[in-house]
Image 1 (cartoon, rainbow, N blue to C red):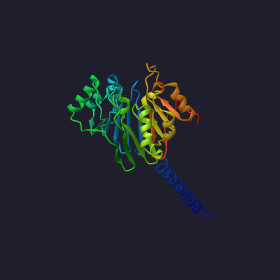
Image 2 (image 1 turned 135 degrees about the vertical axis):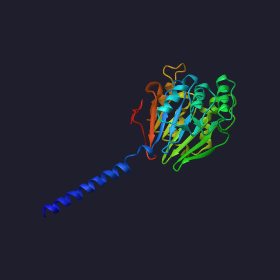
Image 3 (image 1 turned 180 degrees about the horizontal axis):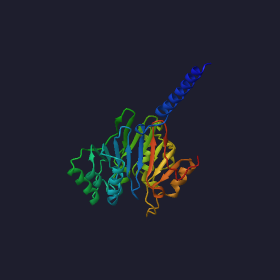
Image 4 (image 1 turned 135 degrees about the horizontal axis):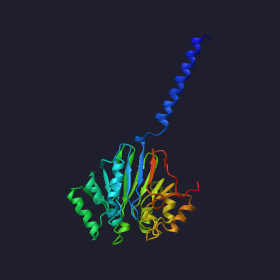
Length: 293
């Protein structure tokens, strides 16, 4: 083999190696714009969850209590959120909707979803007044329905399922988000009765989700054994305040998760939790608070 032939062979091998690396980077390694990202924002004893899609649509579920509004606004701005495509107030309790007044003052909002229940608290009245001031299109979630956010992402509104009287926690909007092969379940503050209603209403294969936002801050009123067995999550995120007066998350719930080898994260111990998915798998760059896998 001549020196020229050897040189051509080396160039051909190098070209193949570079082509392989290019394919690895572009096809195998998820690109940022392929990712669904879930931010369980640390708002103390409350809930606020930001979801950003691959096409940069933004969904905000709750906003913590009134003292957390600016914290949520600042977090969204740091994440380059320009507008909120879907705003969901799961139920009228202050630790879920109090901070949303500041959010409505700070961002363009395409649509606001509320459960079909009212409350007489000043915080809730202020929230409604703010929505009216900004002329937000409000849609009560009275029946189950779905919205397609983009080609491979669908958001299902699956609860509340009936009239729950004066228990506002049970009125929480429940959502299931599907992205590719992955599913994510967001539960507000539902308790045992609403969990049982979901199990009766929907097939196990539909409720099964890789990610679960623990209902009611990890309270023992919720996350029953039957519900956890049906949903069968790989990851649970618990939003609660450090040293909160309610003792959330309750030991009984943590034990149920540990018995099922479910990894869980806690905002009271770890701060804001960020989960990502490419539609094929789910991960976080943070270590779970508990994992025995």
